[in-house]
Image (cartoon, rainbow, N blue to C red; front, side, top):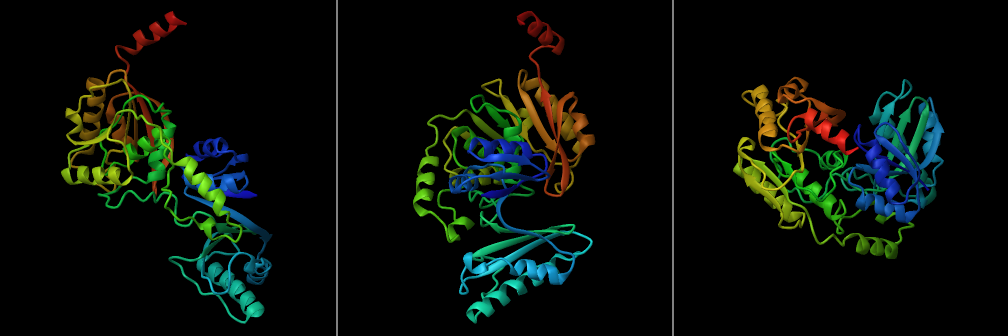
Length: 385
């Protein structure tokens, strides 16, 4: 069976590796999507265990259309009673990149008409639409003249992990946070610190990855559980095997100056059922000195876009000063949409990875704080080699 996994721009290769590790075949990364093939086991595991997938779709029909009549006929050629009953609900999400279909609401309406007309003709009754909690969600994607119709296998978006009940201002998306951890190539054994932790999302996602905890809770309901071919026994087997975390976890610490934010981070960590070695402390990052290391820093400081800071350039300068003074031998990964502010860190970035945080185009910068001068480090490496 063919599937499409959606993700953020910049995380496609990370997601492709996750899917390959889960047993997916013919994995191909695209723009914000990864195409793959697999059986039911791969589908179930990818929804439960992939950290960087937003949604996973199952394509059921593709056709060409340039008119509303062709769209209606193409949608109507799907035997919809194979996917849900007339007494169940459905919803349609449409996305259009086409000169022939420029209004997604119109595409949604015509697609809905084709589905309900088919049910009314076959059974004398039509299913209702429920945009909030449908039994089946249908995706219609139009690119030029090509129409792709898919079923939603995930239910609600996979970034909704279920642990973040109360976030503070401008929380980072869970999928993006996990993607940053995976992009850092953190080994899951050395210490990890987030100096601007907010509600704790980066630390929580890092802890889940280090312990091998699935991205979603075993009590989460997925769209594929409502499919007519759902295999309950296989699903129980997968859930049982997946929720056996490792017994140990490295030191993971987040700090923030806002006491309410720290309280929210602690609540979120408890909701995620994380071990006690994931800690959150109320402290200025300028005053944070690690007791272990070296390790990895991953942080998402204010951009001065949604969160207003009195002097954003000074904040980034102080962040760089903290790196150089307190974290020699560590590696830091900092995401921001404010490129001018990132330059105030005062360190040369060894990598710059384009990412999006919501609508904001960002860069994930990698800074390496060598213990001693970089020239000395290179001389040592050359001597060893």
